[in-house]
Length: 448
Ligand SMILES: [Zn+2]
Image (cartoon, rainbow, N blue to C red; front, side, top):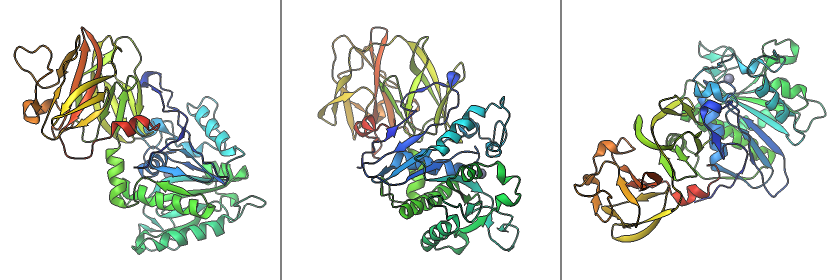
């Protein structure tokens, strides 16, 4: 497996909701070989998940070997998480001018300065648009009034600008991409909004702001007629075509297919709390997880496996959100924490293993936690009379009540370690035969 090392800003440590300013994150894929810098922006509107999921995959699953790719996957993060086009109005109409007291003033100023960064050569703004754009009217959902499956330019050319021939570039890109699209309806067309010639709406957009500042910029629209993963797949096709055009060499961790994109979007939901002493694989997670150990009177910091995850403080519980989706609720139980151990010893299907707290262990038939002097083992959902600490017992899946599992399938269980009244950390045992989120690679993966 490819290990993704990213130069990472933000997200490494994220503060919990209450204090969260709904800032977006900028992820810089750098490389050791000189080349152009591509800036990809997702999520300017919160109800266009194809774009922001594609941008998120570009962060987590790609490595760049020449040039640089900068990604802002969650520009309007608050609207993404709140499933709204724009909680404070349409952000993509705020680039010509906006009131200083607009709640998004700082965010828009910040993305403007990234757009204007000397290093940035070319900018892609990802959207999901209605129907299928066609230059001529075909029917209600296919025509000039639609946006889906189009590559948008504001004008044909930007004079004296590298990559300023927007029309030629757009042509070359869609020719490449369309070669790979069998279904004619899904093929891309170029839409020139002719913004300069009095298109008042388009004058207020991010791409036109970039154009006016001498930067080549394109809007990419995937059709809202498709499901999210389909749209994200097409966005990635377009982004890759741009990288190829620019001579940016890349490598990705997944084979690009609609099925793989869906699988990755649906299943890459992992959350670590408290310096990774607790780590949850949240694919197929239950609607709520009860008695999650948390530190009394301290803000909750988390790390997540992708930049679309937010944890919201709801006073009595925490809401885990992922893009437009609700993942689960964490119902806390408060403890003081002990940090005197980092690992425990397990016997997994007869093989002794040292397991770091925060790791997930795949179990085929049975496991037992080896005794640890001075510590108490609590396997959530398992009880045996006379055992205050549940170590030294060979345990199968059937010995644990399935309703206590993390996942809906009843395969993933918590093993918690305590010292007196203090919580030390958690290990998960996974009885499913699906590949375990490898804690070792996850731990090293700075996307976290
Ligand atoms: Zn849009």
